[in-house]
Amino acid sequence: MPCGEDWLSHPLGIVQGFFAQNGVNPGWEKKVIEYFKEKLKENNAPKWVPSLNEVPLHYLKPNSFVKFRCMIQDMFDPEFYMGVYETVNRNTKARVLHFGKYRDVAECGPQQEVDLNSPRTTTLERQTFYCVPVPGESTWVKEAYVNTNQARVSPSTSYTPSRHKRSYEDDEDMDLQPNKQKEQHAGARQAGSVGGLQWCGEPKRLETEASSGQQLNSLNLSSPFDLNFPLPGEKGPACLVKVYEDWDCFKVNDVLELYGILSVDPVLSILNNDERDASSLLDPMECTDTAEEQRVRSPPASLVPRIHVVLAQKLQHINPLLPACLNKESETFVSSFMSELSPVRAELLGFLTHALLGDSLAAEYLILHLISTVYTRRDVLPLGKFTVNLSGCPRNSTFTEHLYRIIQHLVPASFHLQMTIANMNHLKFIPHKDYTANRLVSGLLQLPSNTSLVIDETLLEQGQLDTPGVHNVTALSNLITWQKVDYDFSYHQMEFPCNINVFITSEGRSLLPADCQIHLQPQLIPPNMEEYMNSLLSAVLPSVLNKFRIYLTLLRFLDYSISDEITKAVEDDFVEMRKNDPQSITADDLHQLLIVARFLSLSAGQTTLSRERWLRAKQLESLRRTRLQQQKCVNGNEL
Image 1 (cartoon, rainbow, N blue to C red):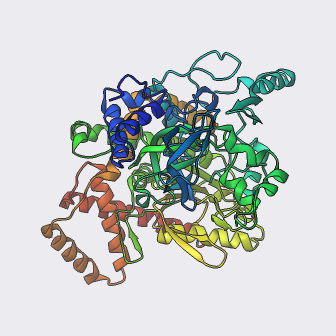
Image 2: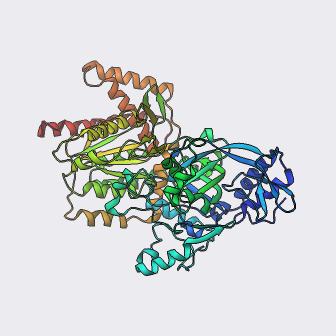
Image 3: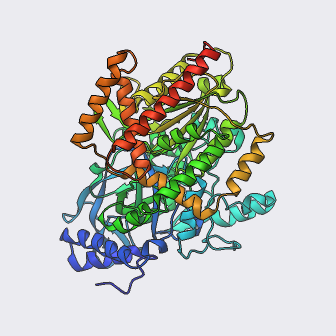
């Protein structure tokens, strides 16, 4: 067994060893996967694997073992590759068998050529995903992953950086240099050769983030190569991910953690270096792909690296403070945290009460909202969604912006949508299929499960929504009501179920549907909102903030049930409430009460409904409704 090889720096050497031992016997592929699985089980081994999320691409060695935390943005058609092929030495006529798995370019020495007619050649199939960093991932999540990663990397460029590990956000030193110095560095990195083929590629580090003025344009394919991020202003690399096993298990919008072999061979970029050359290389008799499609399928490797996946797993969540997989192995962690749940909830309630200007009732509902999740679907109805509309927010103020910052510090992924007429008319909400390039062009609503979407309706002024604006409002309404987004495939729409927590701030009742409206009753109006919210955040100890983050993620995954005894008690209660006034509570109101009771129980760490929690849920709903009625008396247009 090739144990002497460095599996992090030279994974292909490991693969070659198994291939050489087993020949064309397919069993060698399983042995490769098992080998890397075992390696990653070793003490803290995953922390030593360099991550494309944290380490700039030019710091990573080509063909090294890397990992990537990402979302599947698009799936391309399966592609064929030479699983096994034979080369012939032109001088000695010696034949050598090679493997094509985990490679983009055939391995061929100076005097060798590939024998395409060899009977030993086998053609296999692999799937290609276009993957992007997790949209809306919070800064604290990125920082936590950076701090735990112990990978040793050094730059592959001609300059020496000040430190060895940097996130994309920190990797700004090149931007601060005078233009002349930039050109010198870029020139030093552009020339290269592979197998005698001269090439002139792009700089190893390319800007993947749009400037503030270009953020919205980036959604409209305005850049030379649009990285197709769902949200404007996103940073980090996009990757073409080659999957060899079980690709049917994955679907668009899944969040994955991938381990695989990095491929940045400059040959992959040739078609993109000159579009005229690209057109001439395409034989219309043999290739039906357009030049635009070729451009999408073969973007510059320095901009969109390839990862050949050895191991891939769907992530339940992206919170780095919890075990990656919440199963029996993590029971100790879960039970330990649950034992101190009560004080954490009390502190979180106090923290959110301050964030909501002293309104403890609104804070209760915000906690329920933040731990809500779609736990099942009955026919088309998503059960567990809990969209909250916080009305009574000051118009045209920065309150929502600062409240969003608080939420951002608590949840792993979020996005703040400013609901202005201009944004509704011009932003792309719905992903659509571009048939010319044969790819799915992303939109704002292409988000992974458990993303918090905060919509600020207080910025909405009088104006005219045009047709795209109306479509965008409809898309938001469908997302809230049905937890689905209908992607636009021109000739038809394709329904993509989702699980996105929507929180709406508004002055009056929201124009959008909501499961629950709570009217804000501030107990204090700070003279400087920014200063107030900043002091609130700085007053919380980092350890306490981390407990809040674990609390809000963990409770989403707890099982919940209602005993037959409590079910009977709830039914009797419902009948009793309707006796005096049949209009006082409807079946929809009962459903709402059960949802509030569910998340109220879970928020206290209880996985079954008790009589006490049921009464508390009724009390909360009564207080909320009374407050709305009082507001209706003050302003008849409020409800």
